[in-house]
Image (cartoon, rainbow, N blue to C red; front, top):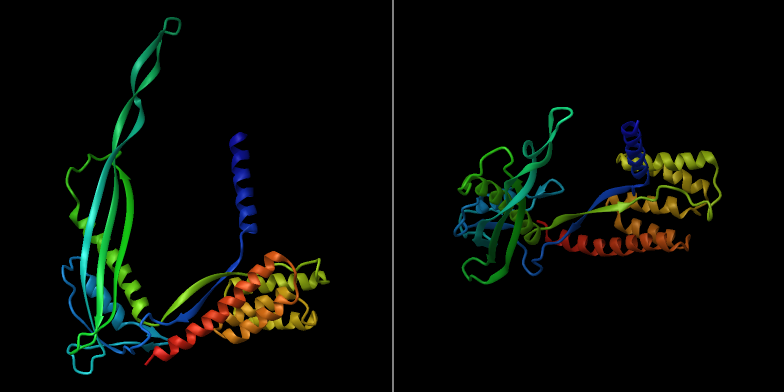
Length: 327
């Protein structure tokens, strides 16, 4: 009976926390590269020095396929003619650090000491043997330095060192401990880290999208707004439409509710602002966030709305900069 109750309790708690979890919408905003003075459209990539993790190949592939709004950002060149910049670099480190430790485990299949019961003529184990299981803590690391320079003059445009690590832990419960380094495993993991570094490099030298998970207001406030049960259900349905990314229909339904409430619901206006932000209509979104701010005194909601105002203001500035950098 206890097992059944525990399962029931676990299901109830899962449903409770799922229902109470904050509902969010993922939006993206265009940000500029860190290269403000030079316009970089054509790039030649030299093979990186000491590259044993495919750092050059990962970076070339990402540069060649970088697109914004379905338009290529860069053109790869094989020579200096008509080239805006040369990208060079070096893999400063590609390493795997292994620390061995042992985990103690009781081996219930092997008894160390028995107690003999004269009446039942049977043995009962009073202490089991323990065994030491070898384990490893692994730290994979790649450090890469890049330089973006002007052809002919070799003037430095941009330089940065990138350092990334990955951690893993494993124990050899049922297999003998391998007393040798697994070089193929090191190459596989460090090549993936190098690929992640290539993404970071591309974000720094190119316009790119930044993603946000923004909170949705998912219920109407009874203390500040009079609404019917039907209107409450409509609002709940709109929240579900936003969660399923059906933003066109959600916008239409929110605009209807906004008319019904005579523009007095900060919850409706906030979610309308959020949808416009998802559409990248940042100026409209900013105006709606400011309108929602005038309709509530709740500190929690004001913090959420103020974040929307500052975010859309900043992202609008960054979008203008990024657009100026595109071909």
